[in-house]
Length: 396
Image (cartoon, rainbow, N blue to C red):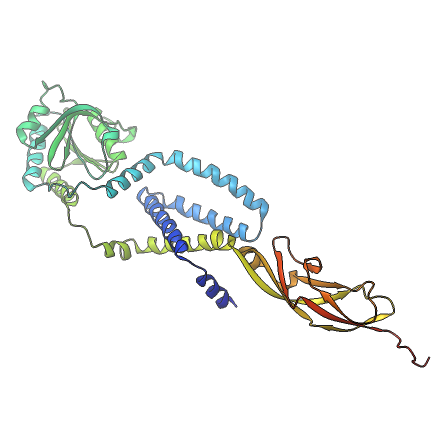
């Protein structure tokens, strides 16, 4: 039975349905990656549980529960937008960057890393405050203010002149992108995480603040202590030696300088396989519940015929056929939920005389749920034979 229903459902899937499911699966896949990226997988699990309960309540016809879920989902969507507004912005920014590439990034050569390491070492030795930002994949413009455009080649002399105390932009940050100094004297957002900033100055607060909202790597040299710190992914770490700093820079810049992408088929079929399977499965379930179930359809049911109101003095001698195939139209969801026990055909024999008569099968004598509509009956008539209880001429 269920195999027949599954085969009937598969045959009803068209090209538009496949495209519909593919688009929804892509959105679900993106949402799953977003929840994983924002470290909010527990929120996704909670939403999936509530969504499963909602689907169950809707399928079972639990009107009050479904109504309550409607109001709850409206509230939770607003709450998620407010709570994760920064992450949502970053998601769309990365989506825009992924869809519009300006070509492979300029490689960050080893001599550029050496210049940064040597410059930070010099600044640390001379207690010269500095703040250097290496851009990752995220855009920085929305989080930065002020500054001066430069677009110059990285050099130790350039960095020393920028962070010289007599320079107008020495209190700001230097932004490095694709191996070049794009801006200097830039103001960054300050972190509000006071527990990690105890005893530290504004440069550290700015570096930590930018690392909390982007994937940039921020280098800070303390003017008071002469220490070198690295801020990334909301973490602020003090560097013990220049070798450690060189390792961190090499790891970061090599990852950003990778211009070769994996094959498209590998990204689609191998990477994030679990999320892809889950997204495809959820998309199929949603289509079956909300689309396939609400498609108009027709279905025939074999319904037994019952005679009612047999006239006094007569008896039902024969009824042929005993079952009639009645076709109903309605939503596929409603048709699938109906059983033969919910359907009845009643023939009213009131006022009929003895003999064989034909009775029409019409919408008037078919009882069915209000969600279904009578279309046709096969056969459209049944033969009803009535006979007297006591035949004429029989001995008394």
